[in-house]
Length: 149
Image (cartoon, rainbow, N blue to C red; front, side, top):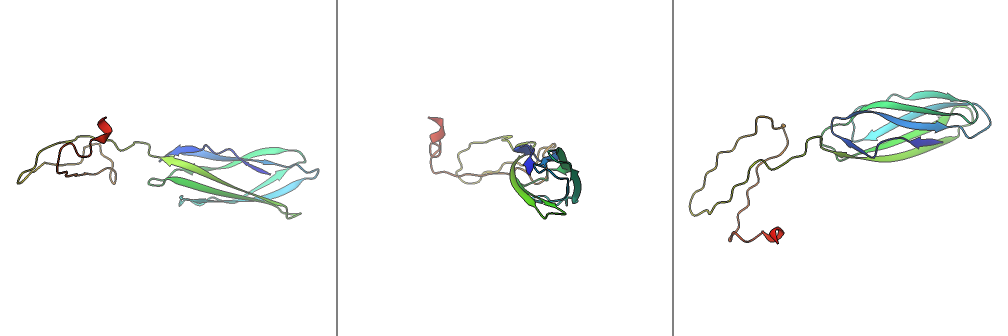
């Protein structure tokens, strides 16, 4: 039997031990082959071999680094007994959030009649590939302000 010990939420760039617990509920020794795939992570995980005595449980795992620009990691772990062919599978999804969330640095409201210019540059500590400039034009200043009530 395989049980997940993964945290349900991780941040981009986090390094953690992706842990699982193996449990032998039989009355005989088991020689197990384990494999894991993770959708959303380019890092490959090496297969593991584990021996379990009757009734024994062991924690196993892989060292993982959460990649940038993903919203979820989908883990699939497969365990097979070499002698009996008995197997177990588990699928677990982790939510990924940015380590540094995008935030509004500056906002400008102006009435545009002919030409309007604003100097724009990336903040010195800005992360490449994150954030951006959003321009919204409305016929009246009150349009789009429903959130103020």
